[in-house]
Length: 77
Image (cartoon, rainbow, N blue to C red; front, side):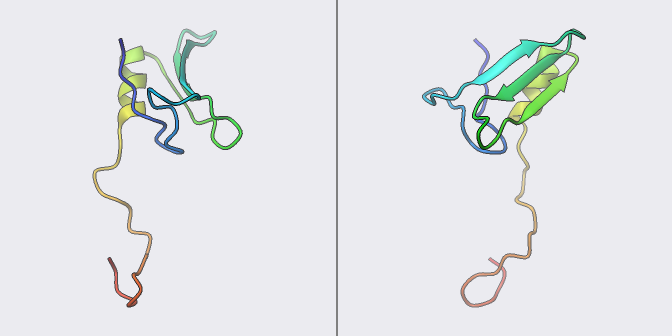
C-alpha cells in the first residue's frame, strides 16, 4: 500500500478524510495524483512514473517561506 501525505495545498486527503487523493494514469501513460477536494483545491501532479509522482506529492518545504509576517509586537516570529 502506498502511503500518501495529505494534499500539500489544502491539507485534505488523509487516511480518515472523506476526500481521497486519486491516483490514475492519463492517456499519455503518465501518473496523475489529484486532490479530490475539488470545491476548494483540485491540486494535481502529473509525472512519468508513479514513484516520481508520489515523491513529488509527499515533498514539503524544509522551512516555511519568508512572507514578511510579524507578530503582535511588530517583530518577525
